[in-house]
Length: 305
Image (cartoon, rainbow, N blue to C red):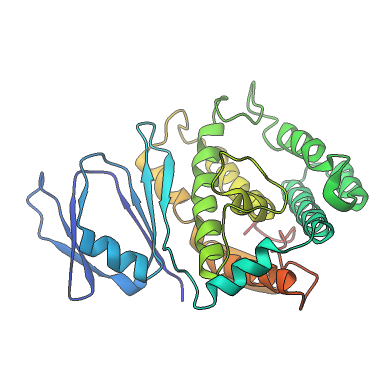
């Protein structure tokens, strides 16, 4: 089942009644709206004048709905997650924490290869040269100690947005960096939600180890999914839309990231469902019943997913 994403960019009062999310807009003469909580996967709160009841928060968390809040620049900055995301959470976290260093290095190697392959296929889908990326993907060693990920990323973005003057991938760089930042923040929340639902800690990574980062594992696992966000941003740029600022229309498109189709294990699936398959396969690697993380594959035939 595809879960819905709700975005609130205006003052609103959010409460609950009869297992429904109830929305009232104090500044507008609108009738209240109701949405079944069980249908919700993500709720994005942007306006600082939104009021939400504790009863609603409790029901959203119990439903494993990701509640995302945004800062003054309209970028997602926090993610509300449940303390208990899986019935076997304690055991699963133990397997995660006990994962050996050689296993983590192998998992990171798989992750980097999948990311570079997807970047290469995205360039090919845009009729751009990807020979270097294909070669680097085959050269990735355990733990990627030669840092092919960084080499590939620099080449990839240089060629993907080659028609955008002065573009380089930088969080504070020229547009469409702002669109990429927003899209990656949504993707990060999708990843963290899936990890929690699979009974793992998003903060304990296989490669990322920043002590100030509470989402190290999410940042690891989302890497091969980034090209799907890039594809959506590329399509927005190609339309000639004004991208200097994140307007409501652009946000609406980027908030469709959890529901966009990707191909995983040879079948199409909404990204949020594919992410759950990825995180479940990751746990199986920690458990020892598998040695491979299941990642989506960017398709070069037909329109990008």
